[in-house]
Each structure stands twice: as structure tokens, then as C-alpha cells.
Length: 337
Image 1 (spheres, rainbow, N blue to C red):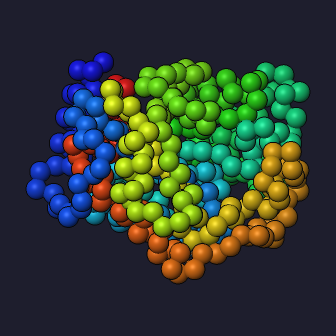
Image 2 (cartoon, rainbow, N blue to C red):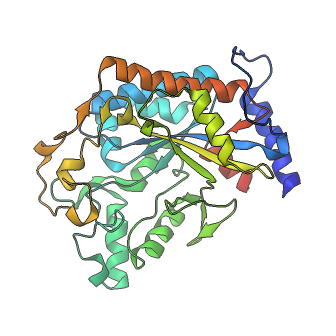
């Protein structure tokens, strides 16, 4: 295993960082420098889900891709059906950019009103027999969801739409729902070509599997947007290093939602869960006019600080290849192979 990782690190260090790349003047990290066989595989992850402010969402994604192409660092972009439908209609050039950028890997996740979003079962899925439930899940994952009724429509959508638009199956698919739903949903994703799933229940080891899908590895999750006070990218990453193992390769996932760059709070949250608690989830029909209630729009200065923090993280990772190996889900898939 150590030899495998050593070779993977060498390959990614050459392909991702390259020779002759621009360097940056940064201070020496205070954490202990790791050798290549103890590298920190580092993923920049953008969860995209804001159908209420599509113009802002699209601006953020374009700027994210700009930065990753400038610094030549991979990025994971997670899309749901809702935003994908809007991007397809309003900005097909963004779809093409995400499809063609050599630094972007597209994955898939779920948000309300899907009845199998975690324990948000307003449809009574557990009361269905296996055949009914499987057909319903497949219908959702092949058709556009109606944001008011929560039902699948006759238009293309779901995981299948992303696969068709981008020319490859999204690498990661978030498998959520009840114990009855999860194995059926995982099989649908796997049959359509997904390689990884995710969990939010603690760390996930390299080559862990659940329901025949590899689990996206994660030794440490850093929700960078949650830092309320000013903290530089260097501070964020050095603190993360202090929490990670010194004895083996580890996986560090740095996470944002696209709306974190311009709002405080989830823009669509008040439509489906006014109090943001599972027991307070509403049932359809949903009032879409309630979007943005209680959500604060960040000032220009606050938005600038978020972007500064993001770029500082990119620069620090770029400038310290002896510590970090930047990857996305495409790289993970190559490592699995």
C-alpha cells in the first residue's frame, strides 16, 4: 500500500504541479514537513445548489474555475438537478466550461425536495414494496424534479442528465435516505457509472466500500466557510495539518458551498425547512416565494474576504508540494484503478 501511494504521489506531483510553474512567496509552514509517502491528498470541493440566485451561483463557479486554471489545481464541483437545469437553460457555456476544463471533476448530490434526502421522507417511501420503490427512485434519477410538488416531471433530469450533459458519469453520488432506500439508490448510481459515494458520519478510509460503491476517502473535513473571524489560508491549512496523522498518507477535504461567497445562510432553506431541523421539514406543495427569508447577503467586504481566503488556500497548497498533493474525484478514480 505504501509503495502504491508513493507511486501515485509521484505521478500526481508531476502531472498536477509540473515543472516551471509559477511560485509564490509565502512563509515556511509551521507544521512539520511531510515526505512524499506521507502526503496530504487535498481536495477543493464546491457544493453547488443555489437555484434561488442562479446569476450569483454562475459567477462563483466561473471564478472558481478561473482560479483553479490559474494555479493549475484540481477542483470537485458537485451539482444537483435543480442548478443543473438552470445552468443548462441560462448558461450552456458554463456547462461546456465545466465539461471541458482539465481541472474540473463533476459529481452529484441531492437537496430537498427529494423525499430521500436524508430522513426527509414526505412521500412514505418505506411503505412501498421493493419494486415500487426502485421504480420511483429510478424515475427521480432520470427526470427533472418539480420544486413545488417535489415530484419527478417528464423532462430529463437527475443523475442521468448530468451524465448525458458532461459525457461521463459524475464520479461521486451522495447516497442518502432510509436503510430501505440506500441499497436500491446505490445500485442505481453504480449501474449508471458512479464510482464513489460519501458519508457525513466521520472519517472514511482509503478503499472503504458501502453498497458496492467506493467511499470518497476523508480523514479530515474542513468547512472553510465556517470560520467567522479572519483566518488566512495558511492558518487554516496549518491547523488542519496539526490534526492529521504523521505516519501515513491522509485525505484532507476543503469544502465550500457556492452561496458561501455571497450569503450567510441557505437561500432555499426557508422553502423546505424554516427552522433547519429535520423534524421541521415541510411537505408539498412548497411556496418558492419564501426563498431567502432570513438569509443575509454578504457585504462587498465580506465577499472579498471569502475570495481572499479561498485564493490563499490555493496558493499555500500550490507552494508546498512537499506537503500537499492536490486531487479531485477523477484522480481518485485513477488511483482506484
